Amino acid sequence: MPRTRIYENTAAPWWRTAVVYQVYIRSFADGNGDGIGDIAGLRARLPYLRELGVDAVWINPWYPSPMADGGYDVADYRSIDPSFGTLSEAEEMIAEAHGLGVRVVLDIVPNHTSNQHNWFLEALEAPPGSPERDRYVFRDGRGPDGSSPPNDWRSRFGGRAWTRVTEPDGTPGQWYLHLFAAEQPDLNWASREVRAEFESILRFWFDRGVDGFRVDVAHGLIKHPDLPDVGLPEDALFDQERHRANHPHWDQDDVHEIYRSWRKIADTYAGDRLFVAEAHVAEDRLPLYVRQDELHTAFNFSFLKAAWDHEELRAVIDQSVTSLAEVGAPPTWVLSNHDVPRHVTRYGRKITHTREHDVDGGPADLELGLRRARAAALLMLALPGGAYMYQGDELGLNEVEDLPEEALRDPTWERSAHTVRGRDGCRVPLPWSGSDSPFGFGPRGSKPWLPQPAEWEALTAQTQSGTPGSTLELYRSALRLRQEQPGFVSETLRWLDAPRGVLAFERSPVLRCVANLSDKPFALPRNWGVLLTSDRLTGGQLPPDTTAWLWGGGAARRA
Ligand code: GLC
Ligand code: CA
Image (tube, rainbow, N blue to C red; front, side):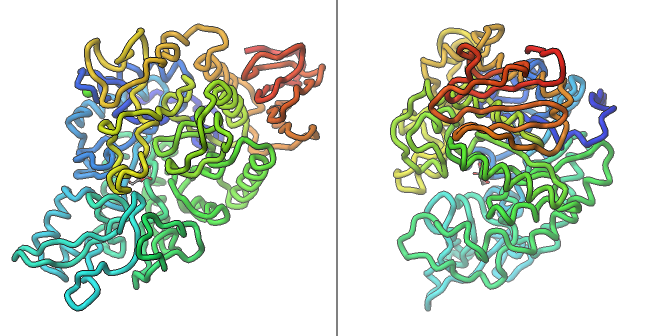
């Protein structure tokens, strides 16, 4: 496999400072016109990603799947879903990306399989107590006839986390656990066979040259062996207790043993392979996942969830930088992904902090939201550590909040009895070019799997490319500067004195970032050169909701 490495001469592993671009493959680019993004589409757009300046792509699950949860219900971990392409296309894509200096990170889904995975089909055919059932979490129900679920656990998508099966002889039988949709049975990680299988899956893809894995639901694999009740009311739709200490199925201590064994495997491969954890845990528990012999990095979701507020952001940044430094891991910043409303929309609201798609923060002012999103991007990209961007961030896309109900695909919509619309609004296919749908997402006349808003005509990559001041050009400049400026290499930051509402910090050597979250303009120091600003300065003043990068090392260089 051709592997052209860039950055060969830098000392630190690439992932400590990488900007990783998340490809939600279903919605990225559609090569064959069936309305679904695919590997062919991604290959055609690799030059775009290279030009953007990202270090790597993380591709959401592309394995064979009935798509009950957008591919997070995996039926076969060693192959590609036919709607996305073939394994050989995947191998070619990996080689092409490497040839362009872009690394490839896949999504591994170890908490659950699809209910169409062979193992689960075998478990349904096998009797209670069999080795086939032991790969999952099957239990007898409660009550004299076993008709009540084994405990009170709730699915993250709403409703109970247990489904009762019909035994092969036709009688009502055991229950199986699914912390997500019923089509996503949880694996039993106490089973040696489950552990060995995932180690083999990791090797399968590492052998094909992938540079790392994003670990889905990394905090969920181990359940308390007694499966005790959480203590939820009978009628609770969701588990609101999920970040509490000693939760019976999140963030159990024994999960770390799994990651120690995964790290050993990654370390046997050449070229700095990476794991990044999706772990929704209390802030002080996150560093445990990235100790030296465990996963390399973990998304910082407190940054994503924080309000557009200087105090909150500063506290989150400090907490993250300090606590991760104790274990020697770099912070990993993120503003949006395929599970949360896009930050242009979040920041356009009165209530800017975001927990989930079920929080109604009122109507969004998208102009304000975009302004803040651009400022947030420069703030994030100036912080020490790595950063993830979600496809379309670079175009300033908003959440699509008016998808027709019949278009909604997120299992949350059904499981919440049509009370929570779910995550489809951030998964709308990208607008690449042209003046109407499919906006270059697929060939002319094709129909994207979710409808695109007509207003996205103004936000296509084609329209923004080469347009001074566009969000796409802002990202391109920012990513280029990140690679050129030595100041971005340091792993620490020093806060500078600034008026209330202004976040100002310095990275050494001599790089400064000033984000104005106040409602007054802020006069920038005159002796510093301006490298880049998220919006125009007004007479040397940094307007509200604007971020500037400054350079103090001699002659100023402008992007
Ligand atoms: C993660 C994914 C999300 C998925 C869930 C279940 O949270 O990001 O999209 O629904 O895991 O696999
Ligand atoms: Ca397609």
